[in-house]
Each structure stands twice: as structure tokens, then as C-alpha cells.
Length: 130
Image (cartoon, rainbow, N blue to C red; front, side, top):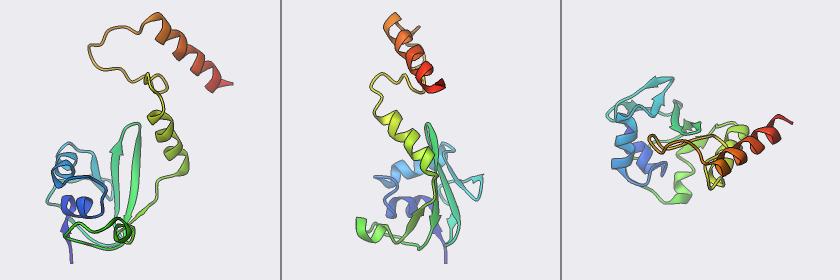
């Protein structure tokens, strides 16, 4: 048996809405077995699913299938996260970075960094290197 990848992503609570899961598939952020997939791609148990969530790529293993959204407790039985711990730490750092300086992510067209932002970035880079 197989179901649509966007349905499964929503049912396993990896996305809040099915529309968001659909948009992630269309945007090329979801991969099954290393290949970018469309929302209607059938997913089966035992397959590896990767979701690009900047600055990392989260990796999951499909344990069970569900067509309808299930409770959080039951959702844990549908999916197993196989993302390396180092990547999860990177994601936690990015979430706690108020200025976005750790990964130097700036909105396109926002101009050059201010002197304060530049100095903060240089200080963090010095800490990372040492």
C-alpha cells in the first residue's frame, strides 16, 4: 500500500497543514530516496524522506502509513527521525540567533550589514574558529 507524500507528511505532523506539505513538495524541499518528488508521489513504509529546513536537511524513515491526521502520540509511530545530532544542534543555534548572524542569512535587498552586525558576526566567527 502507498499514499501521497503530502498526505503522509501532514498526517505524521511534519507539516501543520496539508497545503504547507504540498508547497514544500512543489518547491523541491522534499526528497524520497534522494530524488525530489511532487506532492502526488506515492510513499511506502521503509523509505527515507528528506526535508530541507534551512540551514539543515532533516531526515526521516517512514515506519507506518496514515491517510488521516493522527494525534501526536500516534504520529511518533509513523515516523522515525534519523537526522544527525550535529545538524539538530545547528538548527537550535539558528533558532536562538536573534540577528541571524550565525549563518549570515540576510534578506535579499536588505543592504549591507551595519557596523554593529558586522562586528558581532566577526566576533562569532572568531569564537567558532578557536
